Length: 202
Ligand code: HEC
Picture 1 (cartoon, rainbow, N blue to C red):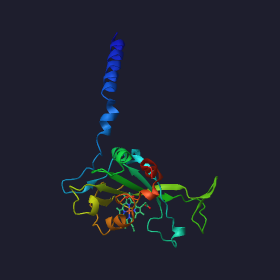
Picture 2: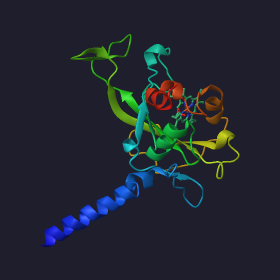
Picture 3: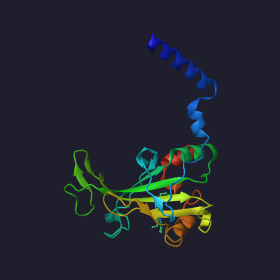
Picture 4: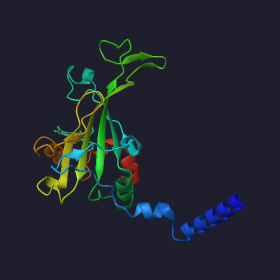
């Protein structure tokens, strides 16, 4: 009897949700889940960012950069899910948008001395090794009105986990300026992210 009551209640709740557009619709109306800041204004490391929308992985290996690329690792980029959905609908980055870039080393396995590629069963190539750094950008014109476009840039360390738990914003000339000049979609390098290009139809 008890089970039956639950079943009926569950079915009723589901039909009410469906009639109101469902809980997924309610989530969608939040344009972006904002970053969390400490009282002193440092940003806290985002939680569960590997479950955000993964948009692409640029790679600038040492072998193609005179042996010393500034970031020789893979750059895995994830956009906070609600901000991604907002971008998909509007082609614009909402206030509060968070995007992370996680650095992943190139796997070490009998690496070819000329190319740095690892030797694997599928051939010579660049395979992912270990997590080795985390950066974040946040668009927030209320908090960062002094930064062009309202975009602030942070690093939780260029090192293996555990990463730093908080980070201070960089001065705009350190990060923001290159993004402002070279990135395709409002300071974001969407030209390198096939998932974003597909979402936006560009
Ligand atoms: C010389 C240009 C340049 C500078 C300076 C720069 N970046 Fe970037 N950034 C890029 C490029 C190019 C990408 C595209 C992905 C890639 O290759 O890593 C990128 C991507 C990113 C992303 C992913 C989201 C996006 O906008 O595409 C984050 C986060 C990021 N950078 C953080 C930083 C931080 C933090 C700094 C300062 C410490 C910084 N960047 C300085 C060129 C730059």
